[in-house]
Length: 125
Image 1 (cartoon, rainbow, N blue to C red):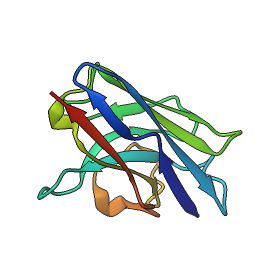
Image 2: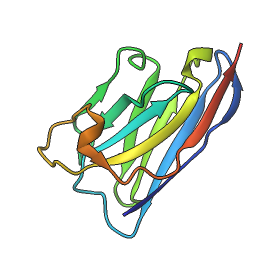
Image 3: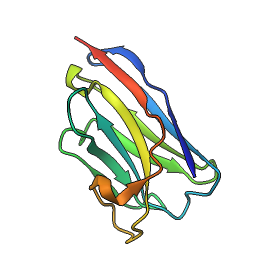
């Protein structure tokens, strides 16, 4: 599976962006999917995750209430709607596939694979 994240860019604080993660080379419809981010000099961290059918989601504390993860299995795509962006949200955002396949939305990066190149989000103050 190859994952292509897109939709990043430069936005002012308070603005919004919608990230997309398109999968190719295999269907992701039966997998939990996650969004992660990595800021310069920091470790990659969990942002949000979604179960295979969208029925369950999980968010990091900083994403709750501002970000929304969704998916369209027919399009083999996962989305991350980000609102009320802050300068501290600046990072490269990655999507990934949960290969552990417990069915639960896990937060640990070791459970995910097929990261792709990420998309850069820059929030100016």
